Image 1 (cartoon, rainbow, N blue to C red):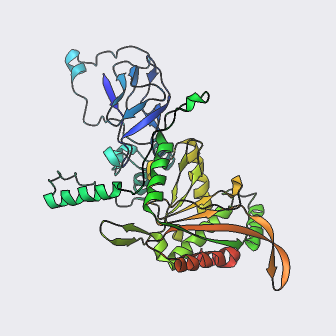
Image 2 (image 1 turned 180 degrees about the vertical axis):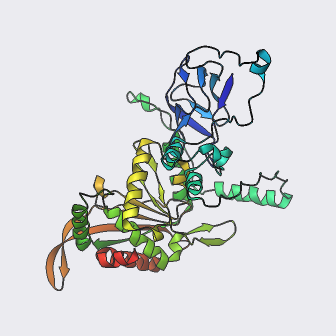
Image 3 (image 1 turned 90 degrees about the horizontal axis):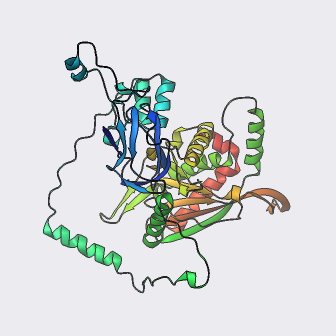
Length: 430
């Protein structure tokens, strides 16, 4: 019997919630067939079966929580698709019990999206050196192999931790006590709500719980300040609609306003590096990032996730539009890779399509700034002494006051507004 345990799903993930079983006890499956959908605190993933055979036991019910390393399925590998035990190999019992040849390999651990990419690229996954956790092959591994690039060496095995010096232990304990000692904070027990009427209860899990942890950390730790402005996007919207109309007969992504804003944000981050940084309060260091990975908040129906568009300084607006379309679709379907939710340097949240004139978003810690986009509205404004109707986009920059001041925010937003208001400037950025 083969005991399949929940694999390592990525950095910091140690459990998941069973969303859907694709198999039943007694069912015959093939290697790489979908086995179970598991939702972690970052995303929902479909885990394929590493072997073929008959399902003997499933380790958990829908809605239950499974821990990394816990047995989630027991599979009888000796049963063929026809439901029979394989016949002995030529040469008798000894040959049948002989160990398999060295060329026979277990299926390579990889997500369905990675396997799909490998098929599209014509790549044999068994030949791709993995760089993901637990020997997992990532999409980047497949792409590197397909392009013939040098594969990074495998990560060195983790060092055996050594006991920390007593003075460091004492310092860490003092820091923990100081962090917990928030004056006037006392969590009183909740009242019995059922004394006033019927209630429904559901577990607070997975993505929704992760959002709660992130938001509490952000609002407690980060001293938020907000800077607000409006951008005149009349010319940009005319250009965007004209281009989408021209491109209608061609294949390619729909050009969204968000893609143009991402390009303008990238230009603003280059001009104001403080907002493309993180603060390490334990080392008294500000870490300025020399790369530009913009996260885009996506409402999935199960909670908020933030896919990351990498290297936006080197992508065209068309490429950024395609990335938004692809990442948002897979985030809502629950098939996005965990690695695609990591490494962001700045986040944008756009509530315009849902309504609302403006918002003050919470910083996506450990980033130091986030941009909130409201709904584009036609408004009367003064231009050259005349009242005219223009399309105005409300913007709010929430930022960490520890690393930047109001003047920095004003310069950042002013530069961004200048570029959004003139499509020609944005085109120069590409």
